[in-house]
Image (cartoon, rainbow, N blue to C red; front, side):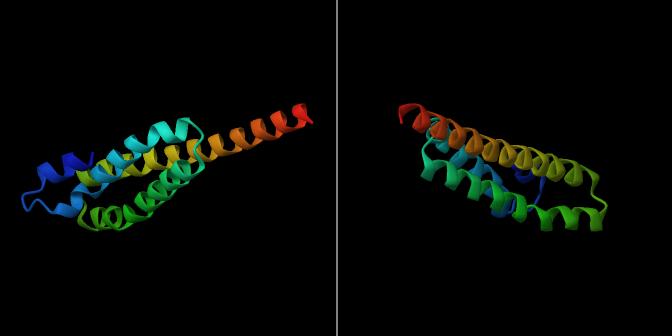
Length: 107
């Protein structure tokens, strides 16, 4: 989505690539998240939250300009980021429950 924004904009602002770079970082962090690495998971959540917040201003600007393609694109990025954030939080909760269960069984 971010690369789409960069490619369709004639001025080609480098800031349009921020979501692309964050997405690549999240892709790299994915293995750490799946291995229940706390630091990697927390960094992934922080990056996702920053993207959600960072996309608000472009979304508001798109509504002000009545730029429907940008509204669609940014809303799609917001929705997928929010879903990812919920997924991370759900994973945290499940991991904590599993650790408590394992700890109680070993006691």
